[in-house]
Amino acid sequence: MRLFHTYIIFIFTRIYLFVMDTKLTLKLDEAVIKRAKRYASSKKLSLSRIIENYLDVLTKQADDDPEISPFVKSISSGKSIPADLDHKKEYADFLHRKYR
Image 1 (tube, rainbow, N blue to C red):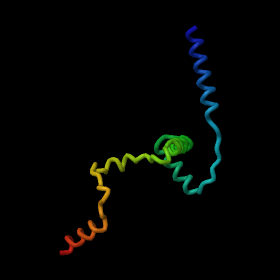
Image 2 (spheres, one colour; image 1 turned 45 degrees about the vertical axis):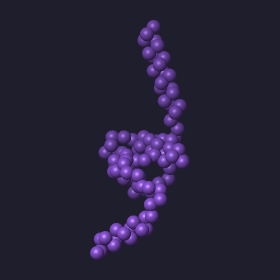
Image 3 (tube, rainbow, N blue to C red; image 1 turned 90 degrees about the vertical axis):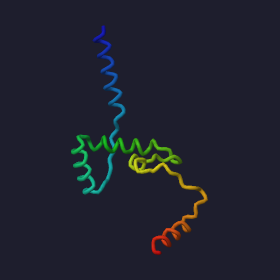
Image 4 (tube, rainbow, N blue to C red; image 1 turned 30 degrees about the vertical axis):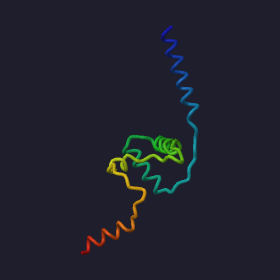
């Protein structure tokens, strides 16, 4: 009986995965395709999987709340800029001090 349940789960999973995949045709520059295929091969992923992951991330982001990339997060200092900062005056002061 246990083997039967495992078999049913396996069949359901295969059907579910089959239903989820849909074919898409894209027209792209040949050089881009070649570079993308080399990249996919070096990462041991299919080009379809890379494009799917990219589109998934792209479409999950809220329009009004863009995600900050890990690189930008890694270089942030944690300091905030005052709302009333006069950047032109600050830059002029910086130049004045620099070229005394």
